[in-house]
Image (tube, rainbow, N blue to C red):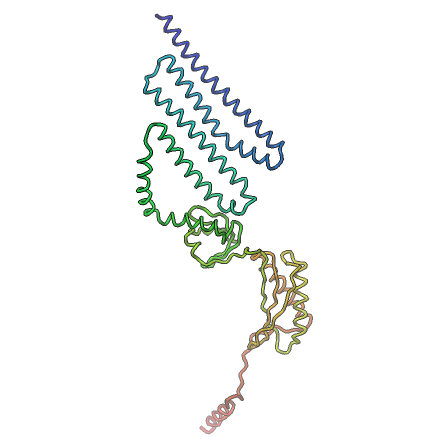
Length: 368
């Protein structure tokens, strides 16, 4: 009897060691497969190489699940062979094996889709803008399908579940109306593309910055001081905004100038154009192919006002090119004797008999 019990225990020990060795060997085989695919990705062209990299990233977690599932199935087989478990326990293990295989398949599909989106987002503006929303939607859809299939394999009818989901979804939709509004507004922003990731925009509330992320609920905008404005998608889609990168990044920069009434306007125009052309050709942010122009438009109280039109490569560069132009123009005006007048208020005492009224008042004061 003792010999039989010792033989039984030794068989258990051999089984456990066999399962442990199989587990280690399978993980080593997995590692070799992934290393082989990685080497193949390095040796292939950029297109095929990136595909193999995506495949390596997508296979890592599912292969681990498959290996653990295989060990679980072997454990079930040995338990059944040695009659160490009841039929109900074996049935539960069988269902766990099936569920794990389904999970592995859907994890592979989810990771393949997610990493494919990350791979193509640098090539496509649409994919770049919608990667976060699309990856989240893919995860939700695949998780729901996996859950329904697992329940179906376990013998649970999914028809009542699907029917009840219709009623539940209506209640959830009413409870999560602001969230769903933001979600569908985010999809609308991605499809209509009024803004794109990397665009420089100005909101109707006055904030300006670069679009950093278009998410499920909100859009993140990084302002020039390096802080973030988080704008709900529903408000952003219904608000008026300016996209300074659409349809192109180049932007005209008007500079207002005022000169004295005694100035030679032809000379003023020539100097302004000369300075503007120099700035556009030699400044880092200037567009050297642009032809600047000058428009005189206002007889002001103390000056004749004109506008010099420049052009810069991006919106936020306008500060630098405008500053460089103003400094150089002021220097040239000083050299040429052209005056930029201070605000002047003139009192015309002769008009409307004002001088006579003043003289009469003085006479009355003298008489008294």
